[in-house]
Amino acid sequence: MELKEQKPHFCAVLTPHRALDQNGVQIVMIITCILAAIPGIVFFLMGAWPIVGFLGLDVALLFWALSKSRKQVNGFEEVTLYPDSLDIRRVSPKGRETRFQFNPFWTKIEVFKDFEDRVTDIVLKSKERSLKIGTFLNPDDKKSFASALSNALYRVKR
Image (cartoon, rainbow, N blue to C red):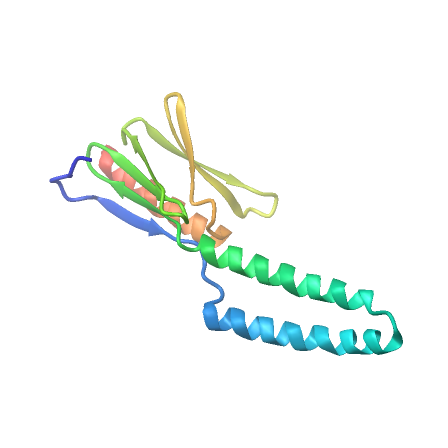
């Protein structure tokens, strides 16, 4: 790993949106359990007790989805632009780090939009290589990030 002695022209750390913290997950699960228990008790008293198992399965699946979502927020991407290189450091939610390096003079940003003019993908292209970045960002964040990075690349190329 080499240390850059020069000051970066642009640096951004991209992180996924964190909608719920641990307390939020607990509150959602408590409310879900209460709301699932009400029909569960009714169905159990009516003799349709297998439905209680399906309601429990719904609660368990929701808990699994929220837990998986919480673990995904530990990942991030760091984009740093120096006069002679564009460095992307991608850290997975499990902590595995991957680095990519582009020459800023050969790098082009491609922004893909949907039919409603929302940004869906940002792709860095340089000769034969391409890299999709910021996949976890929402369309507005993708748009502002692509604009900021594009402006920084333009300034470096001048």
